[in-house]
Length: 73
View: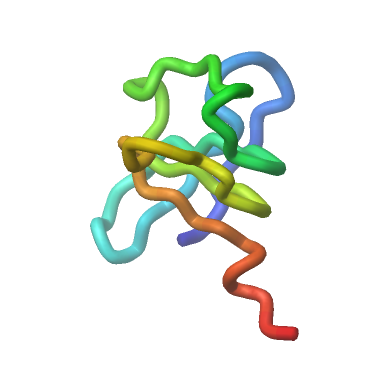
């Protein structure tokens, strides 16, 4: 995935290009993904990128990329 642009105002945090799907995707960024702090409509983005996924209960309805799990210690 390639970052095309970042937004510093309300709404979508970034626009990326998904090379596998050959299209632009809307990305939401969060430090920690938790159910208690969630306030965005799910139809406003395609992917969520976070440092740590702490979502509990039902699975998160969009694809989540957890950066912490990608870092090898």
